[in-house]
Length: 231
Image: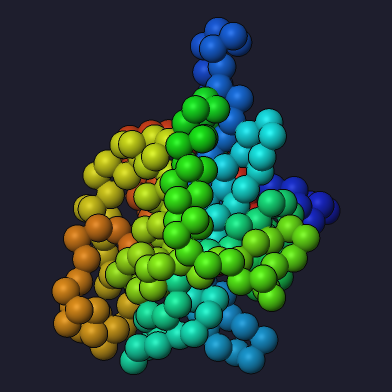
């Protein structure tokens, strides 16, 4: 970490605080966590990035982390088992992301408890229809195989996170379709393969989501936190 920054301490860019009456001030938070690309110890570049969603209330702090954490298939590894990891502590999650030498940008939004409950209920529904993988659970992480498989076009880490976020803030992705630019991330061969699968009209890549949240979203975060020193 740079400048003596503590391991789990974020670098924060604050936005102006609300002048709402304290009695009406929301006490919960939603965090859209967008991880950048990284290069692993073997020199392999991981270009696609990652998105997760954290819902924090007075009583719960859950990070929903969906990805290809099981069997992987497809020409480019673009599909596979849909595995949802649910972290009951944020520190182990972000420690793992930092260890990859990945930069994670955390867009933080204020929520009322009932909004936070709507997001948590969305994921609860996915979990109830899925299967718990007991062998992969830890003291701070539950792992589930969902009924829907993972696919690069969706459901993937970005689409599932945004679907969960929309339960709390329905217009959080309004206008995001204009930022759906696979050519910013994918090779020509990858784009052709996905186009053969029908393509996607919605935003599905973490890098495109990052651009949208930084420049185009209609709902402004209360702050933006940065973890790690990667790209």
